[in-house]
Length: 486
Ligand code: NAD
Image: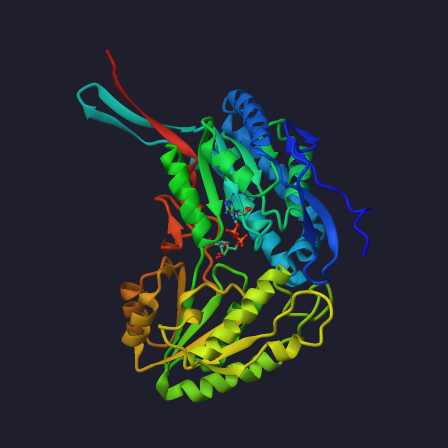
């Protein structure tokens, strides 16, 4: 198809839509069809410089705006997001590929973050002790830190930016978002709605692009803190370079989430939950269930149920009614997934459901059907790496302790789930597992906005996580005032 009529996105700086100073662009593709839907500018560090200058100027005024007034803008914004729910979900499906129901759920998660951030007047309160000695008192006061840079991945174009900017701006900072260059459309709509909600110019800005913008943010002296969400190698890079430049950095990274199924579990519930968690959003979730460790005594029965359920999954364009599994994000990502499937076979895992058979005849879009390997071991690359696609590995284990050992061998430690009816097993799992977000008899234990998103090990670099009280801490700094009343 011809792409000449497709628009090139603009950056949003100081309340204006402006062209990037760079003439480099990338194609934004609808992964369900392969069609080019926009061009995204690959902005330069010069664009970042300008955005920082504008955001720094805006910060001087914004930080002085009373916290309840800032919160009121977020209340208005929340209503606008609710009013535009369907349109936002449609944009997510268009650029990301997940089905409309999942996209609507993502919008909900974004809205919940705005609701949480609108509690800033309470969340920003300090503490005090009126009597630290005779006539002496001390109190903690909380302040914003300045210009924040946010760098986000393709898999949640709405939710992940909403982990960052609502709280950052509610606490008085100004913000520069660098959305994923693969899913940049939704971000622009978020900016339009912020403007409609009455956010002053320069408080929220967008610089589109890829690594040049990221490096511009990492190296800019006037950026105080960076929130990053993305793959492990980039998270590590961002954390190291950002902290080397003496910035506050939180970097949420990749994952390999294990689900443990014990013989006493409600196996029907476990299979349904695991199927949804493994193949929902095409496996492109940082909380996706990508490994199931199942007790040997029930493994045959359980695996057969998984395959039967996977056979019922509908595959196609997520805008169509009844579709469960959409495409992966790009052709290149599909190719990489197919290489993993070959690697799994070569390494000796048993390919019990080959998703390539479902999609071989599909002419357009980047589809991979639900794929399941049995008899996987921890020496295999398909167990070690984050594949980030609809590929599920099954490991058979003797008991709970062996399952915990398998999970704890992974370098990643985002989430882990257990399926059992036994309280003692739940407690043992909770105490022994090395992972930051745990689920009991459910598939995707992604914490809501008021709890921290708490990955461990190579799934997170930093001290303060996104969301919850950690988010408030991350975007604020404190003064402790000691007073003698004479
Ligand atoms: P990615 O690392 O490719 O990209 C993330 C961001 O980093 C993008 O904005 C991208 O432009 C930028 N980037 C990419 N390569 C870069 C480089 N070489 N130098 C500088 N910047 C670079 O991640 P993705 O593929 O967009 O997203 C999927 C990944 O994100 C998965 O690994 C997933 O687990 C992870 N993720 C983690 C969480 C979490 O909470 N831990 C949440 C969502 C996604």
